Length: 168
Ligand SMILES: [Zn+2]
Ligand SMILES: [Zn+2]
Ligand SMILES: [Zn+2]
Image 1 (tube, rainbow, N blue to C red):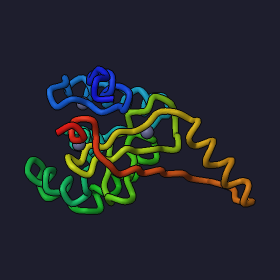
Image 2: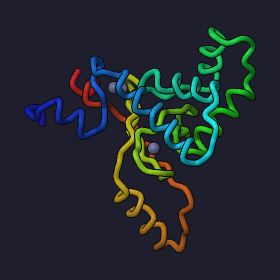
Image 3: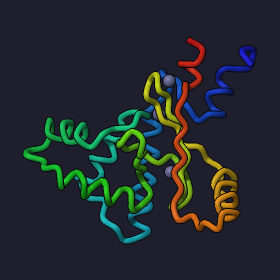
Image 4: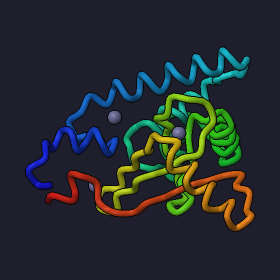
């Protein structure tokens, strides 16, 4: 395992190395947001875009009050409801996810429309990686169906160490 190519491991888990070109991640996320909103006739207002940008500041989950702090640095009198409304909008359009166990938000790195999400959460550095793959959700739903349970929403949150933190 230790002999495995570390770059490959990072890619496999979806984690990014500290020195990666994060501007590309942000650019991709904003492009996707704009395209999606245009497609749906939704308005990506300046505030919504700003909140999305702040969430994408890193791959760590961000708490709403940290967003509020950051916004207040640049905007005049931003009130909590404004931030929450923007978050609601971004979540409704699948552009950000709420990580329940952290009570915080991460940008969606998925490519498709609204989806169930599975997260790998590093308890050392706080990075969050979204796993792509419908197979997990389907397996969970199948198992739930055995109990006669119909799943409407799934959020799988796995806590542990990311590749960088696991080796150090
Ligand atoms: Zn990045
Ligand atoms: Zn997602
Ligand atoms: Zn880590």
